[in-house]
Image (cartoon, rainbow, N blue to C red; front, side, top):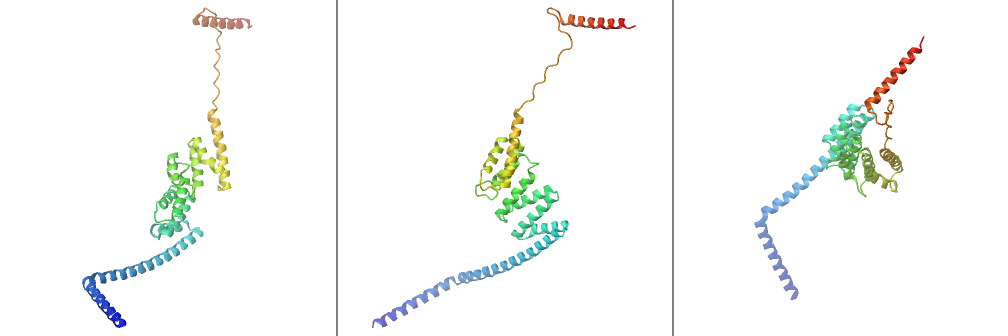
Length: 269
């Protein structure tokens, strides 16, 4: 009897659920169909985009490899044009690599301004990897070091400082050089001295820093050493006797010289 009661209760509950579902469907069938269609379209769109992205990456990879072959074959103009095309319209990853290749070729060819502009373009590209952007920023500052003022170098390199920053030590070295170039010796020392005791600093970098620190010391010594004052010129005229006026002394000197000259003349045969 209990089993029959439970069975009847289940049937009633199922009937109630079915009626509720029918009411929901009748009320919201348009929204349900639209939501299902949206999900299907989203999945299809993602698959299509992913297919296009993979195809574009493969095409960019082939184009990048072809540009590298041109560079290896010493076809500089063709290689530069190929890398520039990838940098302007290629996928983010290959575009960043192409900019690095292009900037390096420009710097090697002596096109410093073009190389700086290419590095700056990569440093500002938010699609690119942060490590590549930081590297580009460091390289641009390095190329500008000889011509830029200290303020510009600071603006370029200070964002790269930090204990966990990948190019912190290289940025400090360049900032120290820029400060030394600007004759800001204390600031140069503040940037460079910590590198000498940093166990993680490369030996080559520390060797360069030692040279710069020696130059700083020499420059400071030279700037503090003043040239000796020039000795006053001696007056060739004899001093006037006490109480004589300068005009009288000059007159006596002239007279004496005239007498001497006359005496010499009279001695001649």
